[in-house]
Amino acid sequence: MKKIILLAVLGLSLAACKKSTPNTDSYVKATIDGVNYNFNKIMYNSLIKDTTLAGDDGQLLQVSAAVDSGENSTDIEFYLIDSTGIKDQSYSSINNHNVFFTPKGSPLPYDFGSVDHPVIFTVTSITSSVIQGTFGGNVYYGGDKNAAVKVITNGKFYINLNQ
Image (cartoon, rainbow, N blue to C red; front, top):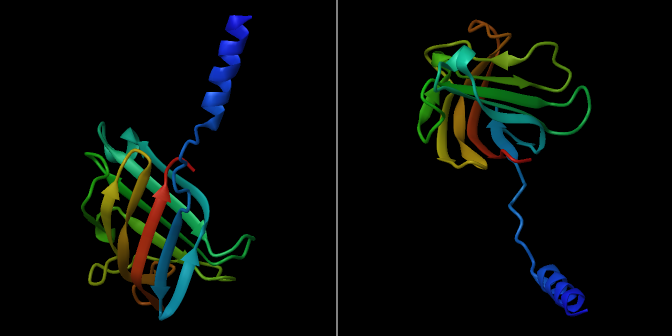
C-alpha cells in the first residue's frame, strides 16, 4: 500500500512540473521587389549529412516555404551545401547554393542567374535544433540572367529543425 501511495505522490509531482517547449515558429521572410512576404507555411526543411553532393563530412540544408496553403501559392525554396558542415558564415549562390522564388500562378520560378548579383546567404546561428540567418540578392525568371529580375532584400529565416 505504501508503494502505491508513493507512486501516486510521485506521479502527481511529475505531472505538476511544467516542461518548457521550444519555439516552433519557423519562418522565411523577405522583401521582393518592394513587396514584403512572410513565408510562414514551412512545407519542408532538413539539415542532413549528404555525402553525394557535399562530400564525406558535408551537410545539405533544404527549406521550402509558402505564403499560404494551396497549389498556386507564392513560395520560396533554398538550399545550402557545405563540404565541412553548415556553419555560421556566408554562402553565395555562385557556389552551388541556390534560391527559387515562384510568384503565385507563375509557370517558372525565378532563380540564380548572375555572378554579378548573386544571392548571399549568411547563417547567423546554428544549433542542433535551429538554424537562422539572412539572405538577399537577385533572382531571374527561369534562371536566365537576360530575363526579368526580382530583387530580394531583408531576407530572414528561422528554421526549427525539429518541426
